[in-house]
Image (tube, rainbow over all chains, first blue to last red; front, side):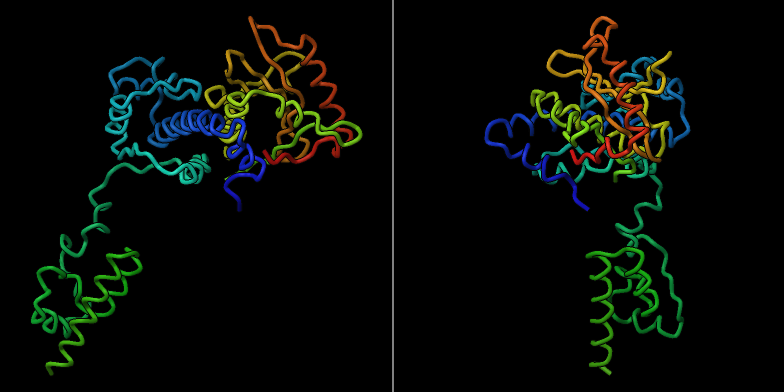
Length: 192
Length: 131
């Protein structure tokens, strides 16, 4: 499915006023997205505008403005204050224009919802270091205790755990864990 | 992800009347229009078409109409349309502006109602718009 129509692409690249369109659309779409996301997350938390205003130590009329796409005058501190109350992260960054189009193309509530922070949300980031060992096959545990990787990678107890990590985590880290496991196995085979 | 289908009113000969109005607007107005539409068309149901999102229902005899609302180029723009003719469809009928509580052109709401009646009796008078 296309992110934008060919017609819009033509408007954005028009020699005459393409730059003006890119700038105007950047402002309009950013305002739309941030207003809708504030409203979506507040509703996701089950907070009325009054409750959210109390948390931010401000008036309800301020929240009404924040959630109105025509407002468009947020400052970084107000966004940080809201991020703190929502207990979420905030990314303000410059990106290529095409990436901006992609990242603002879906304004559905489902796409704008952001779960609040939980300790468990960090597990995919550093799970192999911080989690308790999960040895599913006790017979294989000694193999890895002797491998020298036990302290760094206590999760790697057997193939079953390693493959589970791959499903849970995905991406580079999981691949790295899997490779360490394979290295251990090769070393063990070689030494044996 | 687009959850709604956007349609635009066409003339009897298939002329894209609303589309031509859009094309005649200044750049900043077209950009705002697009951003408002993006927010509305991604809403899972009609409750998301709210004033903060840039939409309002008209009242009284015009209650079947709705207006997109946004300001651009020092003008309050109010493109008028209605929900339909099909499910999860919104049809844009005519481009209006508002100043001091009055719509312009003056008879724009009546024109919108007349066009809505045309579309409801003849669905081909509304084409899917790919803005």
